[in-house]
Length: 607
Image 1: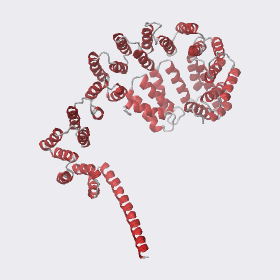
Image 2: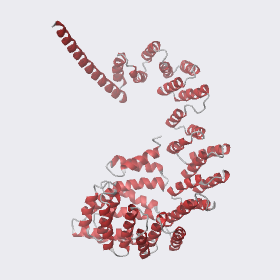
Image 3: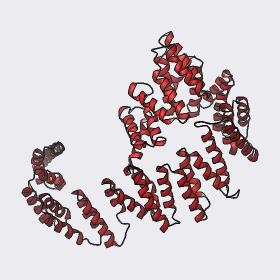
Image 4: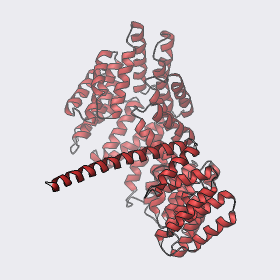
């Protein structure tokens, strides 16, 4: 009986102690949060009072740094020195406290005493990677960045490895925006670690400020190319450097020279040509493909180059200003490719491009209709391929004034691929056609179904169209203005930009005070972008973001502005501003995720 009572009281005592421990732990945590807040607010006196108590507790050395820094801020050097020397006696193996003492002497102005401690620490470094890294990190911890670099470099000598601590040094150089050392460190490491190239490009683009930085780097890269002419990574880096300066022909010249010098297969050039295309340097890309074609039909890149050259010519001719004669030549080139290789799955891309040229650029929609109707019958195509061909055919039925046929095709694809991306696309095209025809109620109904689509792009387009309709059918005047806007959008669809702009401009004349101003501006901006008038488009988009902060199109306008600044206007700083504004002000936008990714990439994150 007595034993049971003893156990009962022991358990009760343990329970009470555990409760007290939890309470003390909570009090300590509250003190830590408060001390940090005081420190961040610059109230070092209050922060030091709390931190002194926390540091007196067992195993609480983690509070040393912030308490030590608070003492330095308060210029209580005697208190700090007494504390550090006590910790050195208690922890002689921890060189962090020695470095703290050196930091204290620095703050007091005793440079000689500080230098003695620092130099001694570096001179005593053993041939142990962990201890070298630990000492350098302690220098970094107390903001002695030059000494951290010195420790890492001394460590390289001790270990006999000139590439040890590369990433640590890169981080310090990047933090200090030391462009010269960043360039040198990356150049030193890339030959043996080419996988670091994407990181180098991202980091350097985030710290380089103007063309002079790229030109300085160019000189350094060329020296490396001279020493290691067969190192592909330096050619890739040099290509990137030229592209950042938008000197595309210079980049191509280096790639061709490298291919000739190494008697290469053309693989490096072929893979790099996509960069020209992505930057819309179509003329340079075409020159690259023309060079690759000179390698003959036995080259593994002959047919791919032939295909990509046609596609690049298509991008060139259908963007900005173009002539019917140039487009006719391009259509003939596609037809030649089809004749040489037959109509099959491998030439499906050429059939689709040829149909697109005929329908939207050469005023031959009947020929385009026949090409796509025949293509649907080709053997070996997947159901997805056939579904996409039917969508394209439906669009051409609109051009040939067969809207009912278009509706039937869209409906067929919607039912066959219900709930799938291609099915949602078909439903949206049906809603868009209804909008063009002024059947706003049916169009809005289809859009409301699509707002829950898994494809963010379709859901966003459907939501925008639904809001546009809902906001502009409140009165007969509103509906008539919306009908004029729909007519203009149909002209855009038919690739009649001049007529579309005239129709858009007439809306405000016919219906002054209508609610379509931002939609009209957005349509004009898209037309200008397609025609290559990027600055004019940017001016309109900027007005949308300033004058319609709560509008339907504002997040679209911000994202498009960021994209234009990054890819077409060569204004990375402004691109970051637009992407960041989109992320901050419109977190629910479907563009916010991509904007965040683009912003971080431009800033050099994730490396």
